[in-house]
Image 1 (spheres, rainbow over the protein chains, first blue to last red):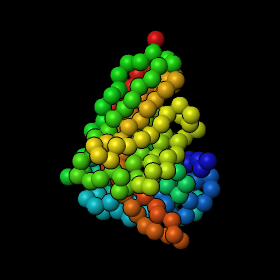
Image 2: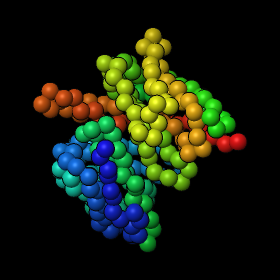
Image 3: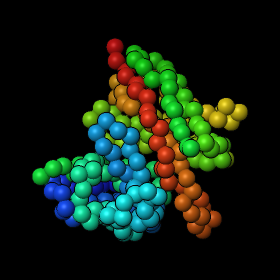
Image 4: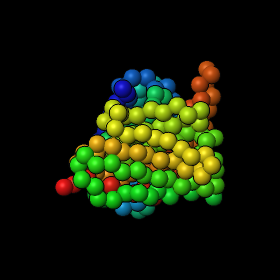
Length: 106
Length: 125
């Protein structure tokens, strides 16, 4: 089974900061990777698929990169609405989520 | 508009069974991939089951042999039959629609695209 490991687990940041979250796969998943955002008490929603493709309606401050086993999600300028937990998820072989990265107010 | 509405959650004793339902609208469940994802209280997301449009089914090791995904094309519904429930199965269960990302070397790659609101299952004596 493919394991997904995110770092950091928690990230403290301020509005306007550039934020980067890393996701590592235990084996090659090519570019079959998505990022999901979940706010407290809410349903997750997909932000990015195929490692770098922005889902329709998602602000352009979100971007994804990487391939193989290492991926990043970047928020270019953190907004108040972006404080949430972010999950990477591979779909190369079945599906696996990372453990999540909580972006909190510094 | 694509919508997924889960139902069937509740309080169940360990060892019991429960069937979750997912009513889909705005698309046809048999034409795409559908998954179930769960989230234990205060924990992260865990994929547990997947059904291909062709009908193939797959499960996470944590539920293999106990849970069964199925669909009723005439009702446009997806189900999750959960048997031999354990306390660690306590979670919100989300029905998710997957959408085609790309076809690569003959394989179809689908990504988790639309989430239902979820239904809560509590396994406790």
